[in-house]
Every structure is written in C-alpha cells, then in structure tokens.
Length: 263
Image 1 (cartoon, rainbow, N blue to C red):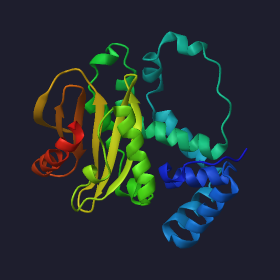
Image 2: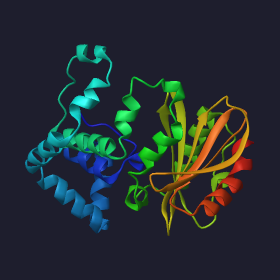
Image 3: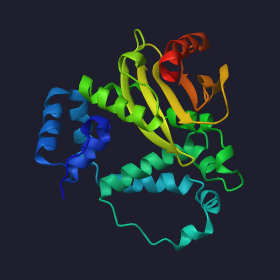
Image 4: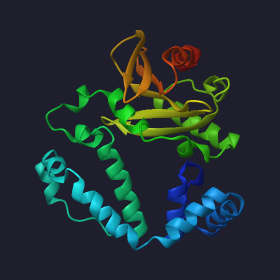
C-alpha cells in the first residue's frame, strides 16, 4: 500500500527502492520522477536498481557465505531463537537491508561489538559506536539531502525538544561548512542526536549528543577508525564532534558550538 514518506530524510537508494516497490503516494512518486529528470546521477542509480532484481541474489549469497554468522549468532540472547520469522520483504528492499547489515558487520566489527553479551550496555563507549556508524558516511550520503530551510528548522526543533537543549538553526551554523541534517538515533535505550555537516574538503562531520550524568569535563581528543574526535560533557549531556578534519580544526568547531549547545 502506498504511503507518504519523509523524502528529505531518505537516501537516494531508499527513495528509489520505495518507488520501485510501490510504497509512495502519487505526490512522492512525482517528486522522484522529477528528480530523475533533473539529476543524471540519480537517474543512473534508478536504472541500475530497476534492472537488477535477479543478479542481487547471487551477489549477496557470496557475501553471506563469508560473514561471521555463527559468531554473530552466538552473541544474541537465547530468547531470540523463539521469535517467529518476519514478514517477507520485497526483493529489492530485502537486499538493500542485507547490504546495510553487511556494511555494519564489516566496518570495524561494530555490529558484533554492539551485540556482545559480555559487556554491560551502560558501559559501552558511545563514541566507538558513533565512529563505526560515521565510517560508512561519504559525501554522497549527505549531498542530496533537502536544503529547504523549513525542513532543517523542523529537524532541529525536534532534536532540541527531545534532547532538552536550546538548539537553533543559527546557533548550529559553522562558517564555510554547510549544515545538512539533524536526526535522532538511539543508543543504550537513550536518544542520541546527530547533527551532520558536509565539509567541502574533508567530507562528513557530525556533532553528536546524548544524555549523560558523568559531570562537566573539558575538551578531550581521540582518534577512531581514521577519524578525529573532540569530546566533552556538561552537567546533563555528553557531546562529540567527529570527522576527518585536523584535530585543531575540529576543536575550533566544537568551541564555536559549545556555548549554543549548553545554553
């Protein structure tokens, strides 16, 4: 059944798959068709996904043969085996989900680390999880997102409300580095805000925030998976800025944002 989806928050592949599987309403389908007419890269991707409904099976079978399935399954709670099978997804969506799963498993072992039963969830390092996630980002991940100011303002307002922070569009601007998206994720049963930017030279940057009671700390630096991180805490939140920019530049960005973040 077709439905209206938030096109601004969807990647190009998600949009195309939803279109091909008949999950968009008429207005959304027209928006996708209009983009295909205007954007040659999007049109090429559309044609590729539309024509590859059979060959994907063999490709993902090979990937799954090489995956550490038994090791991953051993980390899951025993009760998981009692859960019934999920309804079958359309072929393209199933394979797209498999691609995302495999990417997460390969990228630094992040999926296995998240499922590890030997480590209490509250003690897991949220910065390591964010780094695993950010490692999958490229300029293409963010380049086609909506630049509509009202869409961005709505995203920031939702994040500000959930995170209980005085966030504004103006307060989150970074000179020379366009703001692309604000979204809410979840880690350790708590909201995790990600505010993403696209540096023309170094690629994606993210400001991430989670609730914390660790107390106030100053700026600290670390490096994970080839990315630099500046992190600090206020009385009620932990913050980090992550990207491939030089550490001094990221610290300058964090310093610029800090007063607006902490209110």
